[in-house]
Amino acid sequence: MEPRNVDDKELEFMARYLGEQDPAAVKNHLVADIGCAVGTDVRALRADGIAAEQLLALDVTSDFWNAGLQLFRDADHPPCTAVFGDITSSDFLLSSPAPPVSIPSSGPAFAATRGNGMGHLMGAVQVASCTAVLHVLPEDGVSKLLSKVLLLLRPGGLLLGSAVGAHTPGEWEVAYRPGQRRYLHSVDSLRQLLQRTGYENVEVEVAQRDSEDAMPAGVRERIDAHVGQHPERGARQMLRFSAWRPTTA
Image (tube, rainbow, N blue to C red; front, side, top):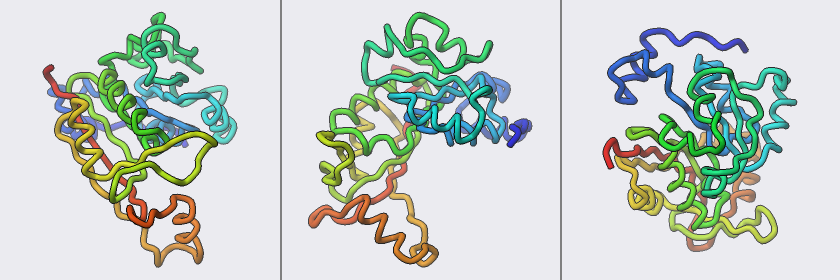
């Protein structure tokens, strides 16, 4: 799919939503996909008209990203800059990042990654997307990630995303990898954590699941078996959240 151009009305809408006076300023915003995996979301943004120079994909390893390059057959022209490493580590952010897969020759993504370390990203990101990431981390890992993303955001920058949650917060008993612990937040616990971390205008809600009537036979049961149910905490929920970095310290 060829990327399209964003028209003036769309720029004006994005500018109002992001608090920009000048719609043209939106074209200089950096959008980061935290936990990009195979890169589906950044490719969707490219198709929606966001320039490659405005996009930055981040993940712990390049395994899924490389699989995406094969899947979408665009290894010779990746959708955007991609950088790999643990952003919860200060060493990664400030001193020794893994090399990007590709760096466009201009634009905010290039400017943010051209230095000796990822420190150039601090305060450079206008929008950070964090989809299906929090629930693969332990409780302290979730806190560290949200703290580091806050540092990446510009004043007035937006964090949005989704994660598997629970009615009552606690460890996720379903095994993911041997020895790895994962934590599920509730609506209230995630809201409180984002507020304690320093975000404002925090919104967390339960996303409505697709109608079970529209699902093929057995799909709902397989999903429930995968995400698990706890006798006290009940069935899992999909949480959606958004939060903003304050415009002033």
